[in-house]
Length: 399
Image 1 (spheres, rainbow, N blue to C red):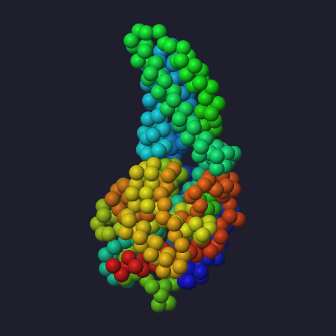
Image 2: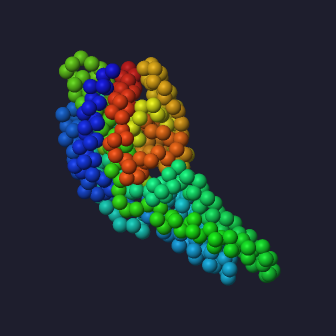
Image 3: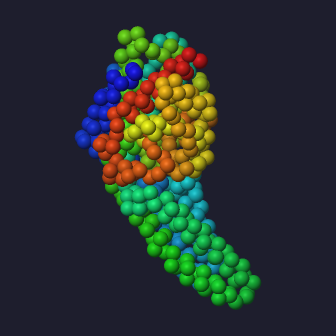
């Protein structure tokens, strides 16, 4: 397997970054440092390589949690004296949650300070005329540690669902009591019991004041591993120019270390917005690599439920066929919670998918926690992912 030659390079690159640069908060100097390092790694294989900057509000994506908790408190208080206002506040809280967190819209970003994010971009021209393009990307930033996930582990998902239900419960009883209030009819005793229940649910809701810290995690698996695979592809193509192995005839390859994925896909959104014309000028395929640590969980993503992104079925099928040809089992699944940078490509009408080597059936302990360290990454998972991408690139180039 050709990719095996680059296994040690990719693994050592992850180790170097986690050890020397450390956690990489979106829009931080560390995110930029990794971008600059990747540019240097890309240069030997690329015809051009540079940092591309963009502006976003990096703390807006998760910064809304205290706002909706305060709205819950205010709504629970108003429920007793002016239920229509309680219903309005709960509707606002649910709208913020839906748009800012579920749909990844920039609904509240104007409230938060803007900063500069940075992506590293390298372009490799083919031997002949450019007729198509393949983008291979991992993201350079790391997540803030999620306290709920750290302490509750796999039970964090039920806890989050119960909290959402608490918000919906308060919205529902506020609407019901508002109807009685507008009719001028005294509220039945049941409304008192329901109001007490809403207050009793506050400890559950209140935990979301501490949903996450502002301390970024090491980010070995999520997602220095993805960046290392992109850099590994660059190493392979640099060698292939001279050793007679596959090198694209008519496919331009773009390597990206994308900034600010953990800030709500802001880096990918900025990239698509800036490059949309050229991305649509020729057939372009985006292969996004995220969460690589164990090849037995080799996975291709078909859809991302929260954002509504539907990835290219032909690209998904191609990934499965590439894996099957090497007798590697590949799962096909959806991302039920959260999103990847592939979302921004697919929503813009550009062929894309996301490749993982991560167990998505549960919240693994090294996902968005302090345990996202290199010890949890199998070097073989990097080689398998890289080989799948090389095989897909070769097939795309022959189309």
